[in-house]
Amino acid sequence: MASTHRRLLGTAALALSAALALTACSSSGGSGSGDSPAKVSKESSGSPYQASVLKKHFDKPDLVLTDTSDRPYDLRKQTAGKATLLFFGYTSCPDVCPTTMGDIGVAMSKLPAEDRKKIDVVFVSTDPERDTPKVLRTWLDSMGTDFIGLTGDLAKVKEAAKPLGILVEDPIVNANGTVTSTHGAQVLGFLPSDDKAHLLYMSGTTMETFAHDVALLAKGVPA
Image (cartoon, rainbow, N blue to C red; front, side, top):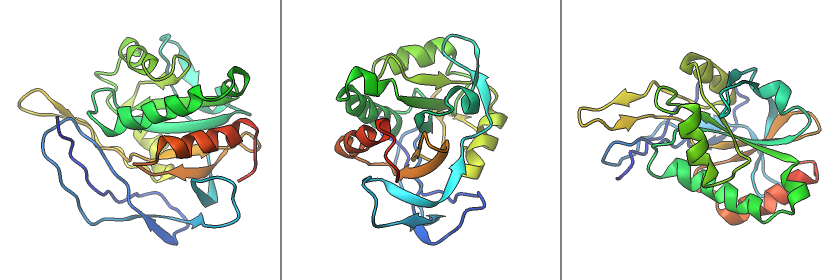
């Protein structure tokens, strides 16, 4: 099923200098685009990473949701001191979400087992009513059995995403039963040295880029 792609305006208080478009996905038919850019301050040189390197280093969200074992999960506390890739999306997304998470999964699979343990990959659902812990676990297992899935209060999810410049809208159930969940489709990379986001991966980032960068993240290489 085709996905609706739109450029969305991030509402966070960011240090603005370079325009980077936020993409979104939905499970409704049709496609299109708009003209509202999200602006994120970034550096463009001197980094060993292939991601965009942020000048403003964002804190991990202070977010407690339910994990796929149906237990409370404190994102900030339980990923402290570990490299973390954070993505907001939903399991019935037809393209951007499975493609992004699948590419991260392939990239992670190329790492030695010990290095994989040094990186947490966290997927936060933007459609918690349908993304139960069981649904999340089944979906994530096809990409990474150690990937962390979180679901719960959508208001908390929206509030956590906002300071990161990620827009999350309320899901819409269409007349034909499909669900439209519009959300920013970027991945944020947090370094283990300070638990802050230094790296930004836009929609369409290749598996090769993720593979290159996760090898550095596992070693704690500065951005």
